[in-house]
Image (cartoon, rainbow, N blue to C red; front, side, top):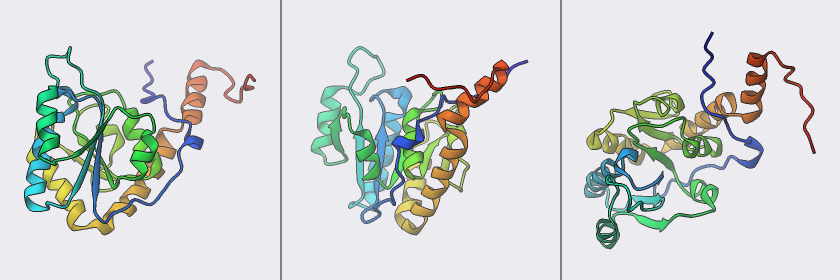
Length: 209
């Protein structure tokens, strides 16, 4: 018999809900700057959105990976920053603060487990735009707490970004749905208890320490 648990979950006590700032709308991507994370799609989508809504803010968090053939290069990154397409603080330690200061979380990845960064964004109460691939699609009910777009489709990604810019009143209601879903699906304690049930152990174990 096979059981699918999904993500290992989060200690939700470490994540406080906060309403999203929406003026201006600020989109956040967290991940290494790799092709497989959808970095090139998000860059193309940003260009589309900026053409229509030049004041929209975008923030990209994550390190360069010069050893990876599919990585964004340092020269490409420098050029994009010089164009003013997005803010790039690089790799940061205070990820939760950046999520709290964002409006919408975006991860157009080609493949994932259940992305921890998305779970964190949901726990803080941010709507999510992500791709229709295993792992990512488990984080979104399309139209409820965000949107699922086809993989490799910058135009579809830009379209959903534009939805939030044009209807910012949907950001916090969808973000609340994300938070509810995080508590239902990504609570580490519930995930652990489910694992104990599957293993036939008593889930009300005593915590050590």
